[in-house]
Length: 299
Image 1: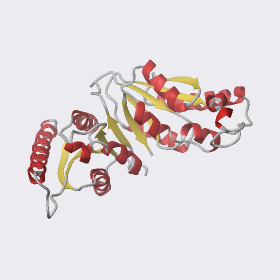
Image 2 (image 1 turned 135 degrees about the vertical axis):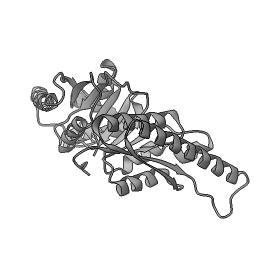
Image 3 (image 1 turned 30 degrees about the vertical axis):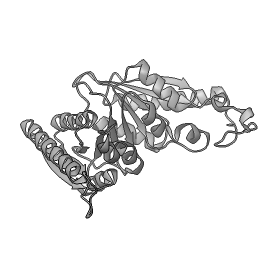
Image 4 (image 1 turned 90 degrees about the vertical axis):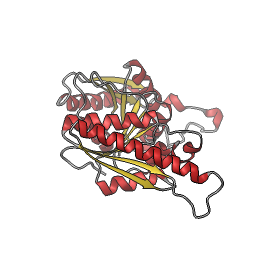
């Protein structure tokens, strides 16, 4: 789904965990800077008709914590002059509840923490971010560490696909804080990166046959893709720069993120087809699993 035009409306899922609080803070900063609005949502488990021993106390405690957190965030948004809606939902499928709420609110993006609470609360919230990413039809921001109010370092993966171009377009709408820097990275597929005849591939990739292009042709095509993306980015970020890598895309993106000490990594949800898709198609899930930085995934 393409994000609607105009000011952003961010849906932030909170659960009392530190990463979720950082997601809500990011939503506050972006809405405050760009004149957007925020919907802050907390999901608590419903009380079953025949609750088990101790379940009533747990659900009541979770609900009280959620109401308190929503009230505190409502005050923070009001103090900054940001239009905010707070919602408490009951569901035993929190990721699906957040996604339905995003549809209802016509949110431009969803922001969640990378990890939830523990131990019982992790049953409800611990893997919400993974399920939100898998089911989302709009950009999803998965927040790990606190992002600075100024000087945000962003790495965006480019692959020449329509989804990759939408990722750049959404990044340009995001209203990054002053002093932010953006680096584009393109990973040229390296045939030897996954060559494993002992595994029975017999000279064929798991995703298809060897590419017909030479290494020089692939690098030249990759360089053109990267230069085009950097030119596009410089319309919004004059100091945008590019990095050309060669190898398995998730590995190269993670390596580049480490080199530029990225606070935020931006990737498209899907890549190209054929060999490129084999290298790029599951990039978002692999980067989500291993990145130390926060991750914005754009469908």
